[in-house]
Length: 169
Ligand SMILES: Cc1cc2nc3c(=O)[nH]c(=O)nc-3n(C[C@H](O)[C@H](O)[C@H](O)COP(=O)(O)O)c2cc1C
Image (cartoon, rainbow, N blue to C red; front, side, top):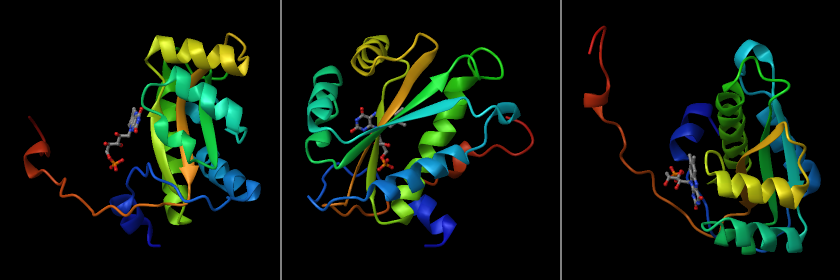
């Protein structure tokens, strides 16, 4: 898949086939996350790979819009590390880039994925911190559900020329 086509055709996938995903494949996706740009190249991230059904169920109890985890083969939680970030607040931006990289890598390999927001919802972050036993300086950023797609989505028209401003507002 050509990179630009991948950027345009990626869609959130929320229905998954029961086909298993190899753990090595998930690590390839996380590897793509680790190649995201980050401020001063601090790479202030950690990734929790989840394939235990009971944990997925517990995540669904905390997160109100994560029902697709019922069918997901894996979930990856992207977390920021306040001890590694360049300056306060940067982990959020860096983890966003890592999350998007994982979504795009999944799409490039025919794996469906959806970003489940955690940050900045404090109740979700607290729930995940407790469930996964995160140290205080490790902050949940997003959960990514993964599985082979059981739905196809067309490319919507999103280009808005009026949102482009040349040289000044
Ligand atoms: C910060 C953020 C939080 C999101 N949270 C959820 C979520 O909790 N549940 C969900 O099903 N999708 C979630 N999404 C996916 C969006 O709904 C989706 O990206 C958007 O509708 C655009 O669709 P597309 O990804 O197919 O282009 C989230 C996306 C972002 C960027």
